[in-house]
Length: 462
Image 1 (tube, helix red, strand yellow):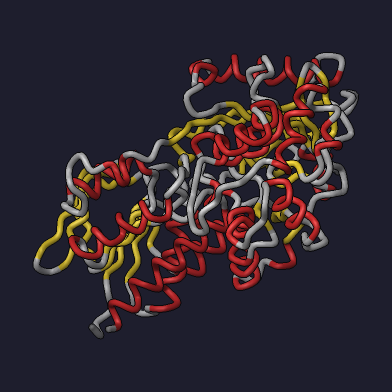
Image 2 (tube, rainbow, N blue to C red):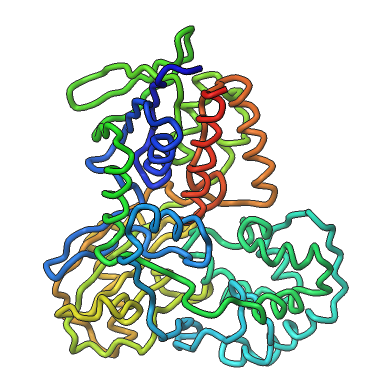
């Protein structure tokens, strides 16, 4: 086809905006419209203004060693805005104590059990120490529950006090529901190559880590990236506009929408669906792309979470750590705290300390039923217990994320491949992207969106 295509992107978060940008590169004559149900684009990239400056209430940073995000930032001319964390390490809250994250861990998996004396008791360390000698039956290319495998080989304490805290902030799910191959691909690859134990695989990977900072952020916040994507894509952004149905016809697709001004229809030749699973699954099923009752997409569970962001008076004695992860057997309502101005030197010039307190895990949503004021009180109380006295709060904001984080279970790649095959057959010219496809996290979402946009462009040009 040679005519300029009409493109509709359902969802104006990072995935949707990246897809719109990539389509503008590959199909420069395309007419791209982005439909965003909220008041502004960005999705889980949500920068707000405190009186002292910008503060993130959504995703905080990205893994700088993965190429997708770093490449996009450079491509958009934002490389000079990149910032990296300082040298402070993180800690674990376990047994009522704050202890340093043990060295030599890989997503919480230990490469040296002797380093776990502050996290595990003697009997628990003895169980973990036996892992290196346990026979390992591993079939190359297979996938299993990460948490179940670690609990079986190292004992449940390693899961509760190391693995689950490490992964809880990213996935808001316990590691028992996460697939090893998707969540820690390097570990799966080491086992594929013949590593005789998880300890040996973790040692191999930690010994070959690339030096330098792992994470990166943008000076000015993620809104800098959102604004750059909007501008570079040239897309028409319709906010407060919800997609209500998708229907295939002889001349393409009719995308029914509802906005403040009332209902209308957007016509499209190509469609990118970039909304969370609870919205994408019924939309694609009703359009005929998936069978009713097919659990391939609708069966992916999602978790909700909340972030309380605080600026507190500098008289508070914050721990000399970048943040604290909470063991899942620790009786506190929050799952993590990031001491933002300790972690990021470029933010340590504010009048107060910046702190983020995170709440919410899959199958444990009771705390999220609390109202914003109650969540803020929990955050302040928890911070006071760590600092030794209740902090003086200068400013606070709460942001909730409903069904935003997908549980990436074993066999997830095959599940998404099956969904995409069905869509290609039944709804040609429709692509699904987002955190429930190639994985949670900024680089994964960027990579998924760009690949999907390139597939659409190639099909159109053919």
